[in-house]
Image (cartoon, one colour):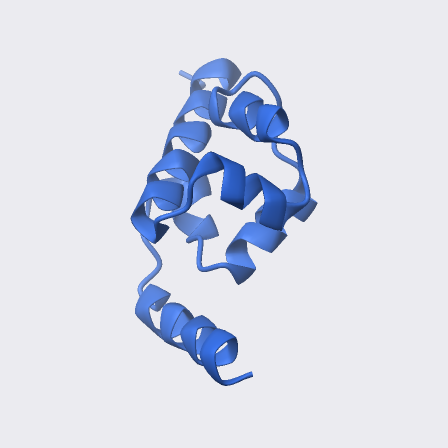
Length: 92
């Protein structure tokens, strides 16, 4: 049986919120950095609208585990990604 697309969208949205919390972002700050409105982010996180590939790509550069967001399977190299991002942010 094929999963309901609304259910799948909600699962993706829930995992995105999980990642936002894991990384310590508020909705307001994340929306600003992603260059979207807070209301737009809220709608994405409530599965009312579909997240754009641009938003997901930008989130990935902030350390969001996009593989996990889509599949529910955590990336095995997420710690390496986080270290790389931390180094870039703190050392230019």
